[in-house]
Amino acid sequence: MVQRHSRREFLKITGVAAGGLALAACSSGTSSPAASAGASAPAGSAPAGGSINFLTWSDHFGEAALAAVKEQTGISVNVSELADNIDGFNKLSQVKGQLDLVSGDALWVPKYYDAGLVETIDINSFEVAKQLYPMAREFDFWTKPDGYLAYPWGWSPIQVVYNPKYVTGSPDSWEVMIDPKYAGKVVMENQPTDIMLFAGIATGAKDIYNMTDAELKTAQDWLRKLKPNVYKLVQQNNETVSALASEEAWLGTQNLGAPDRVKDAGGPEVVAMIPKEGTTGFIDGEMTVKEGANKALIKPYLEAAAQAEWVAQNFLDNGRPLLNEKAYKLLVDGGNQDKADRYLYNQPELALKMRLKGPAGNTDAYVSAFNEVFGG
Image 1: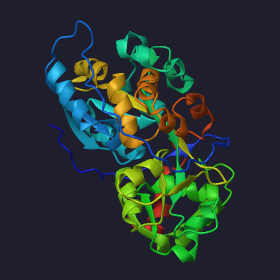
Image 2 (image 1 turned 90 degrees about the horizontal axis):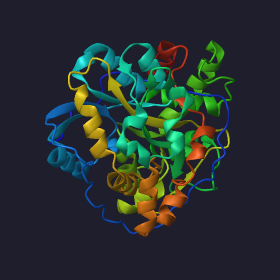
Image 3 (image 1 turned 45 degrees about the horizontal axis):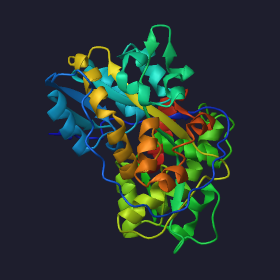
Image 4 (image 1 turned 180 degrees about the vertical axis):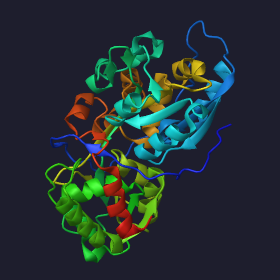
């Protein structure tokens, strides 16, 4: 039912807001998977029929959830995998109404709106939105006079994850990623400007959104030290998990939940840490495409697909916290409170303490600096 299309079509840039991130590093642990009951169709709903075209990341949907949505509403979903935010922005700018729903991070979402690519929603008109943490319906950066910019999904800081069997000394800095001892053992998502932002953080850039020419050169020099260590630049975060599980890679960048995901994939115990220099983070959601040919189906789709039962299962599958409070209660009732609490599901207020992703001032310069090292 889900059609996957080519994921990599454009390069990407993300930025981060000022301020640090003081989150405790998560260590690995065990949890017993809890089966998720099928989400019930909203009261009084009738099959809508048709299909929507959804540009998103691999952890924003589940096959079982989409099958249930199809049965409940008649709506099928054609998924195109999203590489990153500039990737999505550029693609939507080109195809416009050929897409209906697009995922985006934090401060990128207003950029879509300002460019006239997406339209607001009345978040409080969604029955399923009553399941959200109240704060998720009130992010000021998604609030416009005519409505809300995205249906909230999840959040996470980006961590460095490492295998302590091979990576010694309890590292606490981005510098571990460029240590020559780990040549060919680092895996990262192929997100050029995110990687440039990490380099800017690692090298002390004053404003990683707007690095000066000198700061960009310093960040690029850091990338040159990183490159020999990179085993692979992957397309989605589940590939990072696979590489860590197989021990083809010993280090990687990943969302909250990585230790459990690696272990569930048959891999070793790994450790996740927030580098002392800081990191970036995301709050993401689903945006309604202004010219979407099937946008009338988005509300019935989300009313079914964003139900707590499916959100709880998505957390068990992908590990990072989500913004559906009712799903947290289901996780607790299902014996998964330990895992949910370790990965901060019950502390959504921490999301607003992150350096939120958003567009940088000079995308081309960031992409060019990356490509000079890693190739375009």
